[in-house]
Every structure is written in structure tokens, then in C-alpha cells.
Image 1 (cartoon, one colour):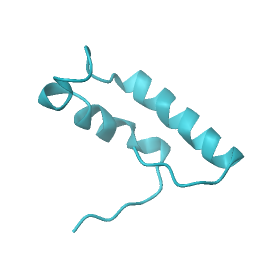
Image 2: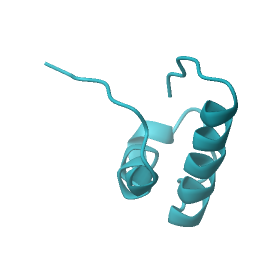
Image 3: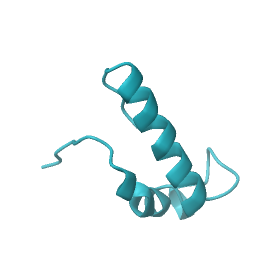
Image 4: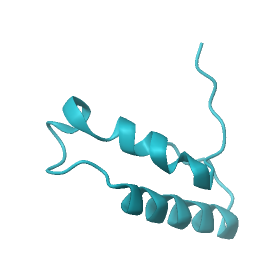
Length: 57
């Protein structure tokens, strides 16, 4: 079973594992770097704080 939870800042390393290798072959040129993953998390959390809503990533 899969349980969804809120995004957390320390999720960046997991995102880099998901968005790399074969999983990105058809939709991205480069794997997600750790710096970019941290930035994406920061932006997503800031937006969620502004306007609470469900966001699926």
C-alpha cells in the first residue's frame, strides 16, 4: 500500500533518486540535481503556505 503525505524539505534526496535514470528518459534531458530538488521543495512549500490546496507531484 502507498500512503501519501505532505512534502518535506528533507525529501530532496528521494526526489533526485526518483527523477533520474530510466524514469526520466522520455520527458527530461537531465536528472534532477540535489540543489534543484531543494529549490523545487522550497518553492512548493512556500506556495502551499500561501494557498492551502492539494498538489500532486
